[in-house]
Image 1 (tube, one colour):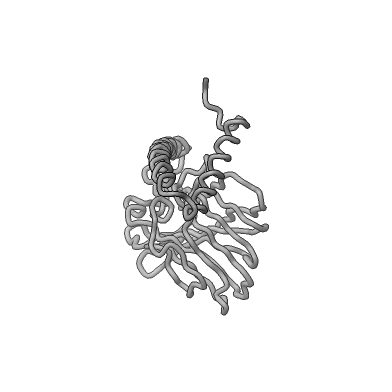
Image 2 (image 1 turned 90 degrees about the horizontal axis):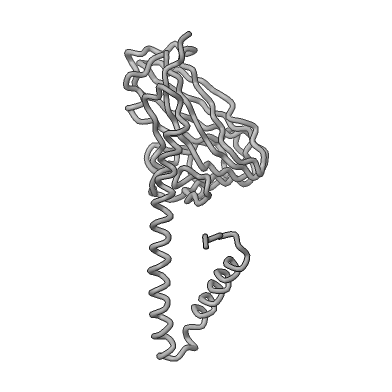
Length: 261
């Protein structure tokens, strides 16, 4: 018979087993030595099976993520990238009351002018079935009294190799908010002494709104000097973020040549 995780009886059995082991863990001090030995053997066997399940589940999830990444890319894509903080654990794991410019791992920083620094930024584990990235970022904002709040992400130098004004840079995000929030994305390209930028509206996000947001930066509209490219980075800008929580579950960038007609 096929396993149905949503079947009520099977779910109830798992819930009762969890409750029983919780009670046993809380009452270890009252158990006899003989009972403790037997239960310890049972716990080790159970842990082994749970570890095996988690390993196989994670492997399958990783394969699914890789397949989905390739599936959604436009034709002619010649570069793609997911930031390190979305793909692996970073240090520090989180920062409370961050200073302006505080980093969460390499190449990621939060920028603000809130005198009380009333916010927290931290890496979170993505566990949803539809999450493509293993990790995400949560930004919790409290009594924010500043005039701006943004998060910058430095793109690798590979993003500049062969970059031309004929390219379109694609940003795919999955962002969830606790309260309504407008979010903007600004792509910055440094070339020589100049920096060109393009700002697009990611969306006016609503609580309970799930799904992906996709925007494209058409570099034909920038006067960048293709021969002097030095740096490229992305800013996510949060408008009026007071008393809100923002979960960035996906942040994926790619580029492709614009279709010519």
